Image (cartoon, rainbow, N blue to C red; front, top):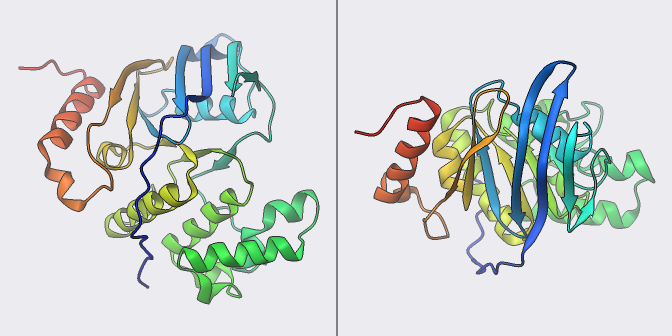
Length: 265
């Protein structure tokens, strides 16, 4: 099935910070997981986090989502302290977690079902999202009839339906094959562009991070801390040819040398 691509590109304007972490850290007993970490994410931007396995990326996301309270420091959304409080951001995991007994439309509207009940307006909006992003023919299908990429699109639409400005995407394409993954990256950029959301994206794939992002935060080994805040100087919309661009390769070398503790020659 062909993925839908949007032809219109809207120039984004810097509207200031939406998320601010101030000396935010997390320990579990005597075990430090995330060292004091500070950064801001500007409204409408696409920022990726990369780092070694076990460096605390998911713990950092859990603190931003309010699932874990910081041991010290704060998490602020538009200047309001949301530390340890859930319900302020959209959060999508690598596993799609679709309910097998619910249709595509039923899964897209799951948030409303769990909180206040699904209205006709919810169903109409979910149907519109599905049609806009290539799943209009599958609204009545169940998850076992969908490919991996289609399931992830349903999961992202479910996240979009929460109406949160900030979306946390934790390796959403990690389980997909290379070709499907690249198609999903381009699709995600179309969705991000058309919805004007702010995205914080975790990945182990450096190429993926560069292709998608305005900035990349590189974390150290545990206890994780940000050791590089790199601006990606590539024009938008992103094109396949950029994967071999000089700026792309330069950013990749810088990130990989830091991740693998290699000094420049």
